[in-house]
Image 1 (tube, rainbow, N blue to C red):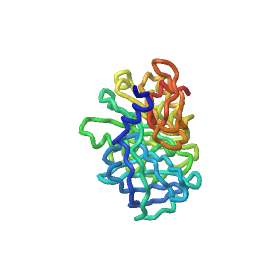
Image 2: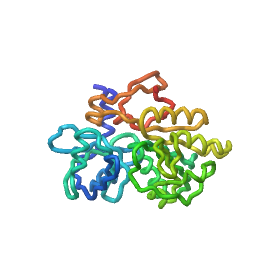
Image 3: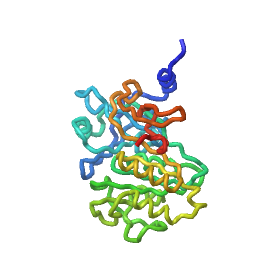
Image 4: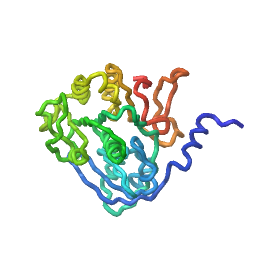
Length: 297
């Protein structure tokens, strides 16, 4: 009997998604009920790529896992950033160092970074920040020449101490100077945006600052730019529209509620325009990363 498309996809995912009894190595709490957790999960860490996420058991009292983007990986660990939303993540936030947590991952189609466009524009909003950090980390470890620029936005306090950047960026006012210390230490130019008036942050949207920077580039420079984004759907739609206006390729990591996260329930399906017409695609395994131009916003 011939395999259908779902069965073929399931076979492709075999031996690429692992279930591990992870161990919490560190937990850092930040304002706004935000947490950064490092978990020992060597199989997941070895296979993860920028855009991958994990499905974590928050507590033995809850049967459903929670999907969380991977922010960084090490030799045997992964790092996640999350904000408490609901009982599951509240219970996860109460876990202490040394506690075991079940990790299912890495899951999903990653960002595909083009060597022909080395000037990557990374745009992250809220809990969409982690995949952008993962990309920046990935690029700095690559021997090829990359010139990323990250724009991160948040309407609650950022999950890090703001630092004044020493890296100048064309087209960005001097008073927009706050950056993320980790990205600054990697030499990745970064600027922050918020409507909350945080010191050194652009008071506006991430797309405002991205538009300002892109407008300073000539045709030859624009030909080297590709946009990557993750965040709330309205933000991603605005980023997609901005990329279209400048004629830039753009990949977005969509955020959707998930039950199984491995393609079985199809509860996270979204409409995607394909060469054969509109189709429902599962964010968990067909995504979460999609070509922004194909998403039916």
